[in-house]
Length: 374
Ligand code: UD1
View 1 (cartoon, rainbow, N blue to C red):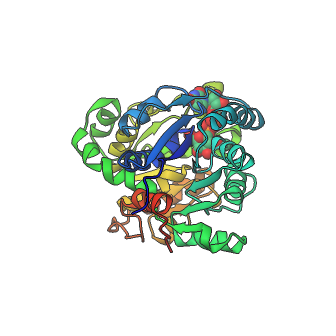
View 2: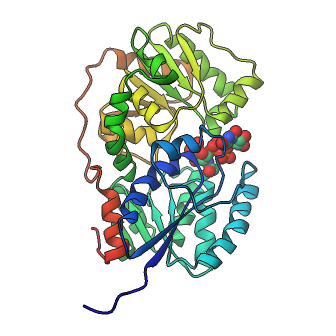
View 3: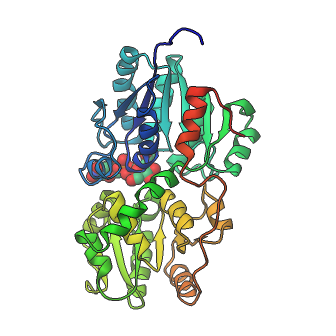
């Protein structure tokens, strides 16, 4: 054996709600390695306790070493603020690798900072493509992947996308879906909570229900589109109770329209719920109506029908697996798609390659032991 090497420093940058479930399993694995110093930077893109602290707590993420407190702003303001505040942190910590997660503004900003300092960038959830350049996330994904040295893909189609863009094959590692690591780890806790807390109580009340989440600018920032969706949900609340944890962006739009549910006994607007509470709600639901990326994957793993209110998805495997279907943001389209679901028998959960709870271990094998994952 050679002499003992100094521990390498890995710096993870997270900032928004969907980042946290991707960080948690990796933080747990890296904490076990004596040869690694793992630092966590929270950019503060999401800052409300229920958008951030509740997730860190449920997912047992160690307290971040640093919070950049960038808060809200335009895309340029938010991206620039992360860059300006992260650069000195990187200069001081001198990480060997900066890990970025998913496709939010904090992801792109951190990748730019690290790449320009000559620090290796690892992208967890690389290679997803909606091919819809009107989505800020698509820009974030493509640029982040171009800047990355280590591209950790969740599915084979993601690897194919990267190779088609000319990314060298040796940079691409098919490690599987890290969101599923968090899901597998916390499913027992979600089942145990059964009915606890306000979200649980709403779910446990009599009758079948559908979980709804909507937060994409394309769906909620345009009043006419949002109105179509709300009218559809109001109509569907006659068939199934609607439980709708409301994202702050959407909450502001609903307040702006002075909108309240027509039948509050059938249609509950909830505050944003924590990770385990959401899992609990989804587990008990008949179906999910959403524009979230993560929920498309979680429902696929669980075999729960999902209607995704978007014209495209960067996660086509969720559609080919049979659980997810894209629906136009129109009242008639959403009502028709939902009513087709009511009559259908639930399919058994599909099995998807490397969506198995072991993705973080594969990433650590690549990062720390030089493994390669084809
Ligand atoms: C961001 C991500 C999106 C992800 C979503 C998950 C980008 C471009 N978008 O969108 O990909 O799906 O997170 O939630 O990075 N706000 C609060 N409290 C918070 C956070 C936000 O009130 O804790 C409000 C602010 O008014 C802010 C608005 O929500 O202006 C939008 O927040 P922002 O982080 O800009 O984008 P999201 O819509 O959350």
